[in-house]
Image (cartoon, rainbow, N blue to C red; front, side, top):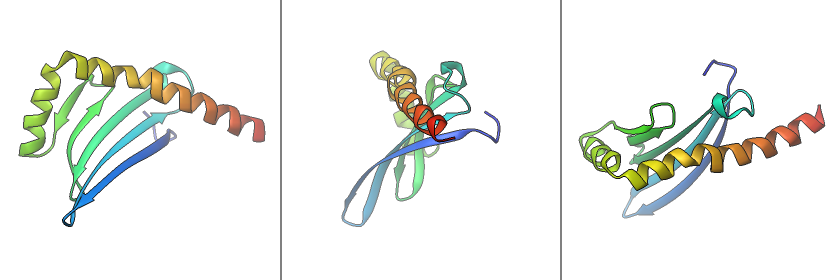
Length: 107
């Protein structure tokens, strides 16, 4: 995606005993066309990204030792992968269509 891309961002936060765990769902896009949309799901622990799914790659990638272990486990689970791949259309496309209609009607 080029630098003119836009991004929708949704966070899920959980905190216990001063440790912060959160997930981020992002939709990076430069048009409402499905081929121009990238869905990215990241898991963070204590402000460090441990694992990420990208619809462009179609798999999880780990960034820490714990993340690499989980990425391998997630990538072996076909239902996990197919569910994440489907998020590009079911999650991103729906929100981007609404956002585009709202913004284009204002200009």
